[in-house]
Length: 320
Image (cartoon, rainbow, N blue to C red; front, side, top):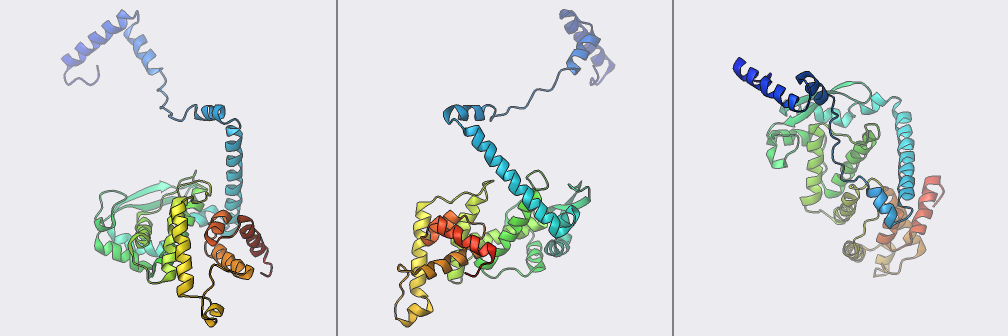
């Protein structure tokens, strides 16, 4: 009735609509009113009823999930409070970090699309959405303009090795998770930061190692990358990976033995003293704080309780 190209088409459509309404015992106005009052259909929820189904199969399932969510919310609230104490205001925390500011300045000439939005603290922000060489927000590294890649690399001294790249990558991931605590669980970086992060991941996937530390970082990255898909921390259950990592540790110890073992002319990796184990636990817990006690115990061949004990001592600042 309203979209016809000519008056004749619109009149014919109105006549058909009046006939359809009359067949239902309605005037045209009543028919249109009833249609406009209908609620939009609810979107299909494929998970509807799943919790009830699981409760039947595993009594106590709902209570366990509710407890997990409560604990998760508590951890999030504690972390939010820590962040606000450190930054003073939410806006200060959401503002670009010094590293982001350097990236934004260096990559600005290569931005081809911007988006403006109001963030969680009511601040109007302008983010790079698409960069030169790509057609969308994301793309393969080889799709980006080589000069854009170089600019993002040189804005902040780029890590030279796998181990250093892993450390910077964890900082970006931590920042993303922390900001997501204030934005409903999801946070998206500016495209220039995204490119930097993708370059770091490319190092983790493809750059040859330069030594034992790089190779160990690559082992840890395998477990770390897997854990990023979960909301709550989970142990990385992979027997083959654990065996290969343990073999790596054995070979590293034999090729680069501790000073006392070297003086004796041999390495006794498999026969560690309690002091050796404690030192290894402290080093790994400090280097990879995101790993669970169970995972550290698995890698070093000690019990999770032992790891937890040393972590508690380290947190308390006790002499260890």
